Image 1 (cartoon, protein in one colour):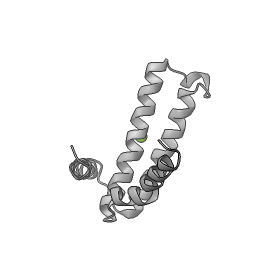
Image 2 (cartoon, rainbow, N blue to C red):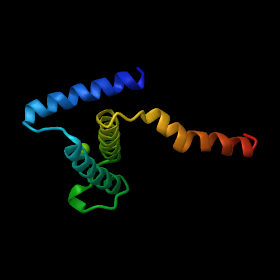
Image 3 (tube, protein in one colour):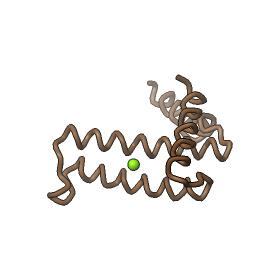
Length: 110
Ligand SMILES: [Mg+2]
């Protein structure tokens, strides 16, 4: 599956979510959702690292699943934002990070 296909499915899921919950998924909503999901990721990280309240502690497999789920929520929200803002996120990632990584590897002889 390529990124366009992934973003199309994320958009379809967002449409389903909007209909189910009666919300409008616009730019403001997406920004606030990203903040919400970032908070959930922070909580999942704290639980995963055992740095949470006793009542929130779960076994390591459940903690890893929660961390995976919240990372997916953040990534999905970012990819939906890229679609809504008509941003070619792969090009931006290449420009901002991948090229620098390639250059670094070349400099290190790797
Ligand atoms: Mg979440």
